[in-house]
Length: 263
Image 1 (cartoon, one colour):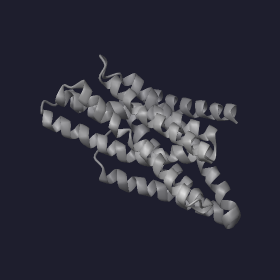
Image 2 (cartoon, rainbow, N blue to C red):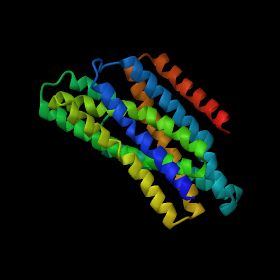
Image 3 (tube, helix red, strand yellow):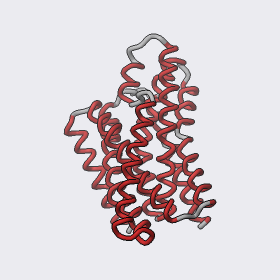
């Protein structure tokens, strides 16, 4: 159990640290690579939706069915799934907008550095809060099944790259310090392993299968919401509609084949 937990925490940390890759891209010579962002955002959305609906939600139902019966387990998983969506929608409504396209557009057009810095810091806060349940998702996935944990970590890592860019670009334009921009962006990704650590402490203290199943289903809802409300719309804003949808389908296909290979 301890070995699985350490593996799960390691995957969560790697997924969160990928935010730093996006930061480096945002500080590079080409900070407006829209094709790259369209492909990465769409691909990540497809991968996350697929793994949530095909792996995570069925796994939650599988855990809950022996405890609550076939109908009760299925119903509890569905309710927890939509509660996860609702909770994320409430959090999303409270947070400021932080998508990469808006951040870059404002970063290249505004002259007020204080406003840019404020926008970058708010983006970092918003992304940190979003990363928290994603870290929990990665941890729970790896804890229940190492191959599932790898799939979730890869999908989340891919979409963390544009998020890192969304933070680093405005902070850099405000401060003209690549070091400051990198670390603000990097630290926003630290919330991901913190979410994984919370999962470790929670399920070590309360190893309850019912709680595990409900949280797992809720996390699936969170991932679907993030994919459909943030990643896919941002991918379409950055590039052509068909390119965004094509990358979405590619993400689903790659995730599907990876799960088959890891089975």
